[in-house]
Length: 472
Image (tube, rainbow, N blue to C red; front, side, top):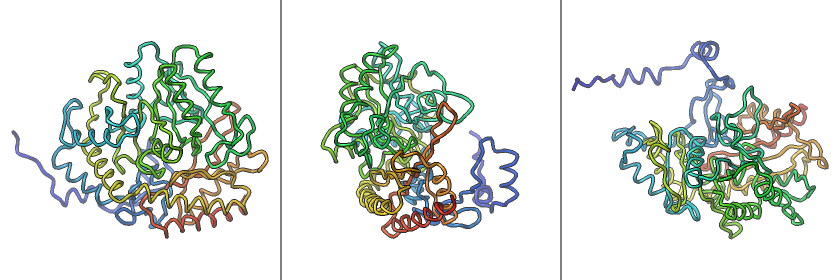
């Protein structure tokens, strides 16, 4: 064996920690970036576990996005950093078909905490995120039902950026379409605030009390009577995130589960954005059960985003009765990501030990309560949807027509940034006529914030809204 070759500590620090210059930034942006940036240079959290982050210019910004809904434990959480450093001294990589100590512990833990009929199930992991986790779910469905290769997906849904998963997602404003579109059967997602059957009281993610679930009947008929081919899986976000922060009514999800069972279709939940405490429970599936007393758990569930508190990971969980995948059916060079699994284990320990989801539920009620009071004075706030710290605020031009107010959202995001707070926004929904809808603001801060920081979100939201309305 050759003699080990090491860099000095000083050499490594020079590579990673030397002060960034404006010339370096300009060269990167002008000459080398393949994907357009947003003219923001993120410099990390203001402190370990903070809900604020720093910019290159030295500004401190209150983060209501958790950096793409990932930092549930705050920016640069010290326990996560330590877990990564500690695991890196043991192993950072192994063959995907090797077990490692951290993989054994991680797999057993995910199976232990999985909700409903997934508890005690089978677990796969990758380092690529939710899109790959869903492709694993699709393969799992296909090996367990060889009668077809089509999947039910929903309007306004989003399931990843691979060319395959783009095909399963809502059309986005870009030059190309997803591949394999013949495998997707797109159907209606229950958007109660814009109900096509004109029920008017579907607010806050709850359906109108007079609603007869016509949307569910339409989905049933499409699946059972009007589908070209045999669907074997149904992929749904129980609470849509990118499409507008839209909770599906409990009765819709219960009915969908029954339809899938009756037609030998595997129900697949994409909990990319709702997992790991954001709704006030570990998973949205558990939130529905806690609130309504009904088990809506799916046959397969996928997770990503906040699972490893900032380290890339995707997780697929299937109920134990399903046939497992072979190493040829599901593999990747990096599908035993030691650092991510270590981070996930520590993340889960913190969430459970310190009751972080319960805190998210309390803080979410505090913020949504403020927003509902504020909406009495601002008719432009059409609907406020939760749960927990999974908050969406829908802006409208007119209370009667509920026409989306894209301009207000755009101004609000811009002005809020100037005021020191960073809000998220729904993805652009592109129509066939060429116009787009983007009118839902997202409030999804780290779950570890305190009451004072929640108050500051409310103060800066109101200030930014008033300024945005004046500027239009």
